[in-house]
Amino acid sequence: MKSLFNNLKLNNKFVLLYLPITLMLFWTLFPIYWIINTSFKNNGDILQKSQDYFPVNPTTANFVAAWDNVGFGVYFKNSTIVGVSTVLVVVALSILAGYAISRYKFKGKALTLVLFLATQFIPRNMLIIPMFTLFKTMGLINSPLALVLTYSAVEIPFTAVLMSGFVSNVPKELEEAAEIDGCSKFQVMRYVMLPLLLPGISATAIFTFIYAWNEFLIALMLNTQQSRFTLPVGLNFLIGENTVNYGVLAAGGVIVLIPSILLFAYAQKHLISGMSGAVKG
Image 1 (tube, rainbow, N blue to C red):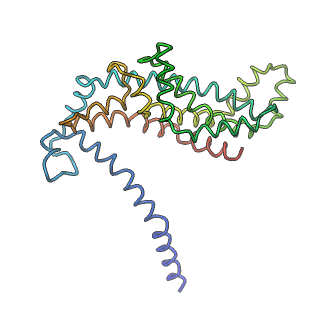
Image 2 (image 1 turned 45 degrees about the vertical axis):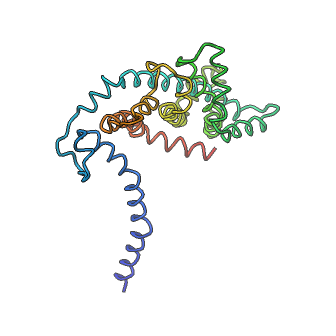
């Protein structure tokens, strides 16, 4: 009887837990697998009616064509410059803003938090025309600086609130003890707070980089020269009016995916602990 109960319990766990997770993983990962599979096929194999789930004659020609002929090497450099610069700006300002929100009391603090969160409900499409007009007046069209400023303005409100939750988990007594030992505010921030905020900083950096790396619409509007395209914009221009080179397009998609996957694989522990720290705060 006990054995039968255990079997029923195991079956219920499989149906309610493992089966949904397996289906969700398949639903999520199969398109990624299919992009990778397609990227190693030649056009003849891609366009045939019966599709193979593994490349019959695997080739890297699509990657060579995407990187050298199409210009993905230039797009990759542009995306890296924009992504890394945005991360540096957002992380630096988010730490300062999050620390101020968590540690200091000032007039309008509640209103500031409300406004920070309210900005996340504004559709990005509404900002395209004002931003284009502003940056055109400033002479920043086709400049990475325009994207860095825009992405930073979009991300800082959310990341500042995220960082403030993590700062709140750091006991004030640690700062007071450091100040008693003779540390200045800058030294307290550098030697006490930053090491403890590393998971939160990692979470902020990951969210910011992924957004800057994958953002398409703003990058499309603010860059009119092909030499200034980022990877998502470059991918879009691989889709012609009458023809599409699916092999090169898939190879370009894989190139876009690789940094994001490597970043998550490397920093997943910091991301999870950072998010849990923000929630506790």
